Image 1 (cartoon, rainbow, N blue to C red):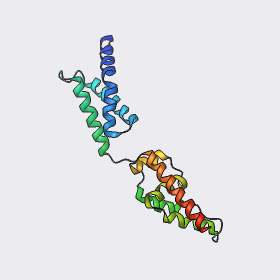
Image 2 (cartoon, rainbow, N blue to C red):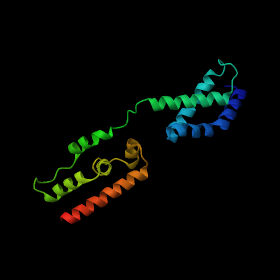
Image 3 (cartoon, helix red, strand yellow):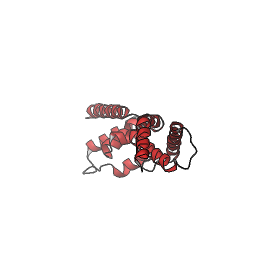
Image 4 (spheres, rainbow, N blue to C red):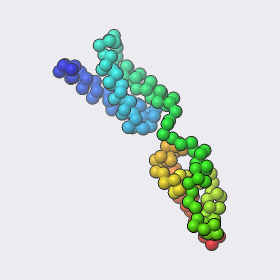
Length: 166
């Protein structure tokens, strides 16, 4: 890369990078992934700059980022677990009481079963499966604050129910 080309790349990059990242986050809502897409767009733009007819660099970069975001949204996510499989996982992974006659453990299991569905799923994912708030929030397509609220609600309901039955 010559000094003139280097200067051109830096100017275009500095002029458009931040705005393109913000544009990408409107689609995919993940700044790290948005930054990766924007960087890939700049690489592709630079690799094809000599082969393309003179066009608007800004429009070309925005179109590349938009298309990359759409492709990303169309791809199935490989790192997610279906929320519908959590109850089955709960049965397999849930702690076993020390004895079959442990009444407190039985009361806890019954109390967990009476929780509203979303509160039960959040409680199971975080307290039983030891998953992070962010992971569960991404999986359920809700905010981390919603997860915290659901967990707080489920703990309060469990505490109230176990206190009444004790």
